Length: 105
Image 1 (cartoon, rainbow, N blue to C red):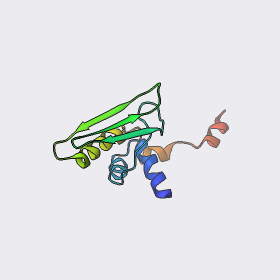
Image 2 (cartoon, helix red, strand yellow):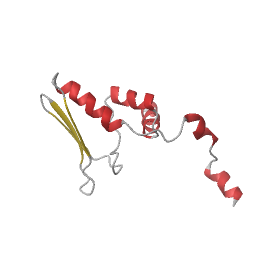
Image 3 (cartoon, rainbow, N blue to C red):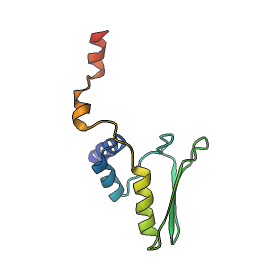
C-alpha cells in the first residue's frame, strides 16, 4: 500500500515510469483539472469514458477503440494519468525542507 501511495505521488509529479505503472495497475489518479478523487469510469464495447464528478470541473477523457472496451479503458487511463513532469527526482532532492526555509527568514 505504501508503495502504491509513493508511486501515485511520483506519477502526479510527472514521473513517466510511475504513470505507466499506476495505469498498468489500474490505479486512477485524481482529476487533472481540479484534483478531485470523485471520478466515474464508464465502458462500453468500443469506448471508455473517465469523468470528474465535481460539478464545477467536469473534466473528461473519452477514448474509443475498435478492439474492445479493455483497450479503450487502457487508453483512457493512460490519458487521464499523464501529467507533465515538474521536476526530476534529483531536482526534488535539492530543495530545502520547510524547516530550512524558516532559518533563512
